[in-house]
Image (cartoon, rainbow over all chains, first blue to last red; front, side):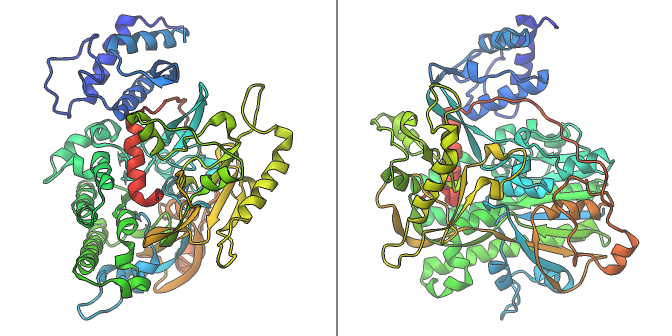
Length: 96
Length: 530
């Protein structure tokens, strides 16, 4: 199985997020691993779903994002690119 | 180009027959009147639950919901003792669409504004702008990748106007005054023009075999303004506001008629044009609070609602808010018009024992049959279908256990409000199983009125028009009476020995609260809520 390193996944996710928001007119410097989806990119939940969909399409793999998005029966309020990348890398490496 | 499909969401002959009639100023829809005279038309029978998601997917795949697996806008998944909702998308569709079938055989297609086409198929040969997608995600879900920039260059292009605007519609339902209802209709005139301009641009600049565009304003207008346009209710159209609303609706249909004419003209004299709706429309006059009734009969328990904003929002959502551990039968969503029976598949699950299913379901049916009009004794639920009667197929397991057909064709309510049955303060528009189908162009019969056709047949007709074989495993068939005998003799319908090809992506997404609320607001606006 291919070893997916966090750093590589982070780069991919930064690219996907940048592609997603290109028409939104956000005033921000750029996307980094510490960028928060809701606080910084103004993601509504529909945007999170589209982001997850784009990631799954990129890797052509079912990643089970519900495990990341739902904790103790509630939706998590926000996530950083790094948090999502860590989850994705784990999932791709068979760890989730 | 060979084939043009114009989808009119919710269009019904009840309205169109009136709009093609000669009046003092001519018909409201003169070009459609020409199609009536020079083409062929018939009623198009929708899916068992005449609803946008299953019906359009059936039209696009030639398969019934028991095969393609799309039954509603959303589906439920149970986790941690609660129910979570997920929006269906194209990857939930188990059947191959005509866009894919045509693409893999070298045909160049364009499909605009059809629901459940996002994300687009990877083998698409042509252009796709899916419907039901918020504007911020149109670019990512449009194909080819440069199409969005091409659309941006069109005069007047406004993605916020083009796409579903959940926020606009949420605001409208929070305070649905006469003025907001009027604005709701006004909003759809320029919105349809946006879709028309994209279609017109592609027709003018691309070599296509199939162009398909769907105008969904018909459905939205009819949900909110039915009482102003139904000829059977015309006597009630009185007063300045009513007259203004009716004229606004007529403006919409005049504009639509112009779009149809321009698209057919742009497609060229050799094109065969097909116009189809996913379902028809009719009047609903009463509210049926089905979960209140099931609660009275002991099948479900309501979840206590606190005063927190989250709890109130959840209670007002489109999905039942119940004590799941005490619920064995319930209606998930108003648009489903279905009852789900909870079966305990493993120890610890809530629900009836699998071996009790038949007995339990028969008893539930009897209870539903006994929901009657207190004055007349008439059954409120005129028909109750077991799912194997209407949803047989490999995807039947995702269907509700019972499908209800109300006496006024309306959608049920899932609100926790008494009484169970209540007359509406004013008549509203709701879906009817009989939609429309029209065909026009060379090789097509003239002036004929066929009996009726099934919605799954449309896909087969389109493939035939494109000169392609109809997949042998497709439910839909090329119905008789559409094409002339000479045309059929020169081009016999070919049924392939091979089946359709299904490309599946695995998926699992959960929908967060905010999105749920936006979608629910949209659905409520469309009349699936009280």
